[in-house]
Image 1 (cartoon, rainbow, N blue to C red):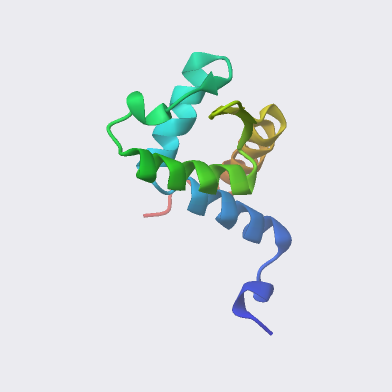
Image 2: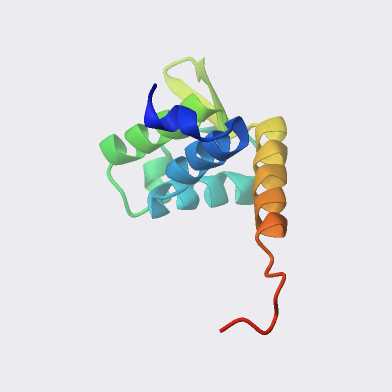
Length: 108
């Protein structure tokens, strides 16, 4: 048995989302895509203080977990947020934060 299997699916899913969001570059990319409110064609690195190679690696991570969609348009890629995945992300983190609210306000 793998150690990961000792934790329930909800905990494992939350950890996957958190791992992808654990890098500030990925957070910046998500914020940039959200601020544009449309699919972005072209090089996102023009708008962030990161090299194209670095942005590409972070886009790959975000795409693999499903937070963004990307499709080829001619010689460029079009990227946008995946609304359903963002909604799921919001729900899983909201549920988690709600579940860890302190019950004993007098502790420590």
